[in-house]
Image 1 (cartoon, rainbow, N blue to C red):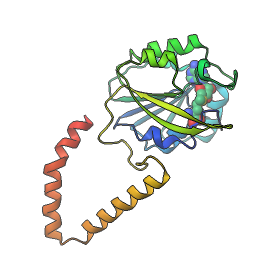
Image 2 (spheres, rainbow, N blue to C red):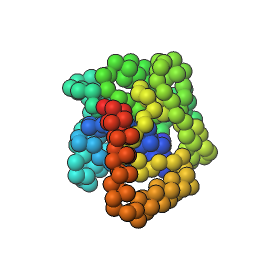
Image 3 (tube, helix red, strand yellow):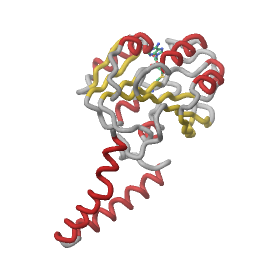
Length: 227
Ligand SMILES: C[S@@+](CC[C@H](N)C(=O)[O-])C[C@H]1O[C@@H](n2cnc3c(N)ncnc32)[C@H](O)[C@@H]1O
């Protein structure tokens, strides 16, 4: 399944801002590139208002993913949040920043976006929203952090923004895609691999001392960040 704005080539950027979470909710699932690539949470829920999308996912039956046919707004308004949830929202682009007028079979008017954002800012959990910068998001998501990345469209390259309502994480739910692009990810991977090889080659007693030091120096900090 391919969508204008589908995250098939850019899911890494979204996964790289995700802090640890117990429940993952993706509200405008479509092809669900992020859901498919990220490390699963304890509970994983995908929502889409289009029956065709739900039918495609149901035929595939990805283990551990609950797929729900609903409007995102209805689902979020009634979900029983505990605070350990992370929602990722990738709604159709806002009409103000869209080049073609109608690109999805189920569309979002400016009013739909307004309602979604009003609901979003009231939710008691972590959330990441993606899209092109527009007045509504810029004016409503005051105090939210942003990160941008470039994404190829069928005609050119455009800047996408991620808005998120938590501090940029010091530890990630899934660190396999660390790095801004393919080259940076390869470099990071190789650097970490060299470090791991070095630790593997250490004298066992020295390694135990090193491991204890790592624990004392970083474990409690990592846990307090994760909480
Ligand atoms: C931009 S696409 C999502 C692309 C997806 N991130 C991917 O990687 O393929 C938008 C999706 O939102 C769905 N949608 C439209 N209105 C919706 C609503 N009110 N609630 C939930 N999903 C909706 C559409 O059916 C479509 O699948």
